[in-house]
Every structure is written in structure tokens, then in C-alpha cells.
Image 1 (cartoon, rainbow, N blue to C red):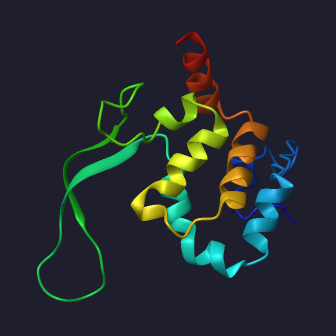
Image 2: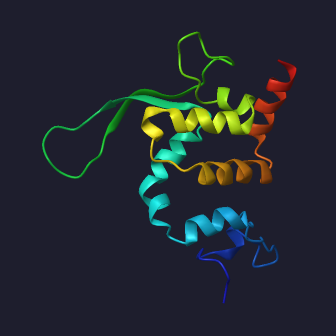
Amino acid sequence: MPNCLFVKTSLCCYNESVIIETPHCNPNLENLIVSRNQHHMDSIRCYNSAMSFAFFGANIALPPGQGPYCFRIHGAVYHRMSSLEADPGSITAFGQLYIMDTAEANMFRLNHSSNRGLRIEVLELLNQALYDCNNPYLQSFKQVGEVE
């Protein structure tokens, strides 16, 4: 009996001759997800937004009428990154937060109006998880910060 769910195991693992290990999750991050912490579950989208490196954008058209929520994207989907430094009077966001000190970046995140209910200890845990997994984007931003 094959170990994978594919009908033809030869397509994915050469008839079980290749064994693919399950990736290990950061234990703190896994605990946050598995514990079903109500605060985290209620705020997960805010944490995802607060920790983002770029802005995801598209021209979205909602279908007419009623029904389940869905949308159609017209044109291109794009990721916008902010400049390396915030313009005077603008809010530090996205990749700019990964160039600066982690504690300072977390304070910027907490002070943002859409992040009022977030907890510092969860932001610290998420930052540490990014460091622990050697996130290539985080490493690139940190290198740019060191050069600057």
C-alpha cells in the first residue's frame, strides 16, 4: 500500500524509493497554531498583515447580486514594496520594518491603528520564527540595513 495519496506513486516518489521527510515546524510557532489560542485565532489576519514584507494588490471586481463572497481580478496581480526608508510624515511599514531593530519594528507594528489588539509576545515569537527558519527575505532586508 503506497504511503502517499497519489493514485500512481511513480509520479511522486518513484514507487516509494524516495522518502520525503515532513518539514519540522518551529515549536513555538506550532504551539501557537495548535493551542487554538483564541486571541491568535481572532487576530491571525492582523498578525499576517503586520508581519508582511510587501503589499498585495489587484484590481478587484465584485460580481453583481447576492451569493457567496468571491471576486474576479482584472489585469495583473502585483506586490508593492515600500522604499527602504519611510518618507517624512509617512508610516514605516512592510520591508522597512525588517531593516531596523526587531524591538523598534514591533513598536511600530503595535502603534499602527489596525494593530491595536496585537500582543508584543506574539510579534516577538513570529519574528523569532522568521529568524529560526532562515527566511531568505528577512536575511536580504537585514543585509540591506547593515549596508545602509
